[in-house]
Image 1 (cartoon, rainbow, N blue to C red):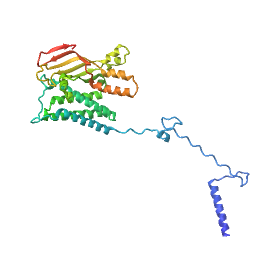
Image 2 (spheres, rainbow, N blue to C red):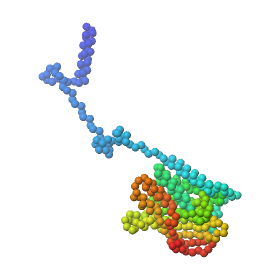
Image 3 (cartoon, rainbow, N blue to C red):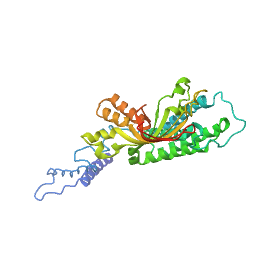
Image 4 (cartoon, rainbow, N blue to C red):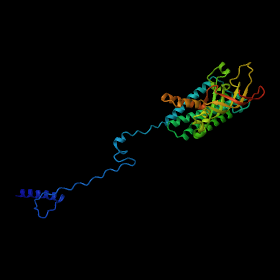
Length: 355
């Protein structure tokens, strides 16, 4: 009896819970055994709002299919680029040691100054000052290009590279003090090169309008006794500041004869002859310094025009190489003075034209 009562109580309890969970009001006029009304349909779920910037039905940025296509962030190569640049300076330092110091006797004591500036009796006739400016300028700008390519900002890259270049040439002068002399005028040339590089790298309009270049063809004295120290063949070198007419939009974009003006640059330049390398004994050629206004063939403009319309990886690489090389150098015999002033400690000064 007790078991039946417990069973009945359990059944009533289950029914009561079901009724409480889903109460069905009795329909008037119907019996209590009428079937319950169907449960109401669930409320519709609102569609997800599209992510900003996407159309309805377009996967958003957090959609798994989209996330799988997202490119990983670029690898930071800035530290590596500093290492590569430092390694390049180590290589240049090794060449400098072989060319300038190996098997060279030191002087009795470290020497400061004494080589002068641009006088007719100075080392290389003063052309080495232009060479120092060009060397520092070129190293600084090439280093800036490397650092910018690997993620450094333009200003930061130019400051790092120009500072590194000037510091390297400063220590060259310190070492020169033990073998030749520490030259304040050489260091001034280095400083001018560093400052010029900073200006060119951070003011594109100036860089587009001007180049500082060297033109070299081995001199007679160098061809007689070639060595690894080719950078001091000043009798075969000429330094020029060139103005580039193609920086003028009308010239650059012309379809007529005006476009050919971009290939000829007005230049102002300096050169010395028969100072360095030292002529052999018995050679009576006069020493000469020359400052001139002239013209130069702009090989950078020529190759940019020739290769700019070509397609393919090889053409793009060739264009990049020639553009960089001819930013700093001329091909031999591609410039000529138009009006010049010549000074010599061995003969009378004279003006020249169309030499």
